[in-house]
Length: 258
Image 1 (cartoon, one colour):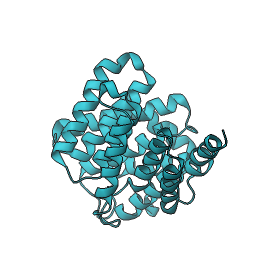
Image 2 (cartoon, helix red, strand yellow):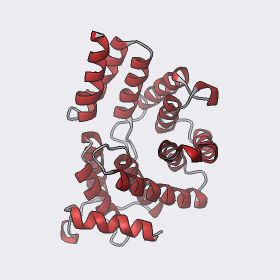
Image 3 (cartoon, rainbow, N blue to C red):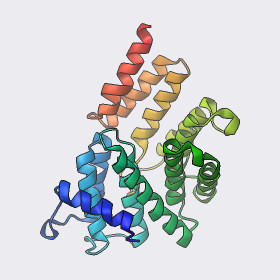
Image 4 (cartoon, helix red, strand yellow):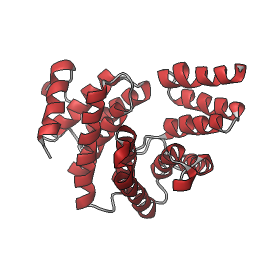
């Protein structure tokens, strides 16, 4: 999987981000917990560092490390998070995005029934469309197909309707998206999260995201009280989220004053 693209991203991160030496290697559980803390805090520096440690796991697996498929998924997930952070430079976002797509395309070619990977790949295609709208016709079909395969393979995974809901939020209703679809999918995601033990083995991410995106959907639907309730639920899971505290809530407060 080590393409020139992947190696370039890894070298940049190695030069700029402190990570663990082999003597300090974390267990898989510790590593995924660190990954989630970084994701919820929206820390680009920490996400880069965790991603580098995940890349090292490909060569020096941690204690109780999973198989290669889950490790590749975790690296792609870290890239997805980094590609969504405004603090990450634009070119670096594109590098992380392309690397994550490449990893997951390889993974689903080997295991087409890997629903978590299919769903995340569909979301990554959506990000690529946002960066290059001219590719929308091709990538839109790929994104929809990946998300549909994920839903068929894992109807009980809350992350699948979460990513479908985010996609619907950004997609016009005439193309199968829209706020009605987004709200329905995000509420379904939260219903499935209510049945998933919070301490289940990783991947167990997404509760925070479901509340934050449902809040944005409700804000767009002129339901500020509903949106605020969802943002507060998101902050109960990630009290240090600058995205919610300094972007989403102020936008909601500003809308309420107009």
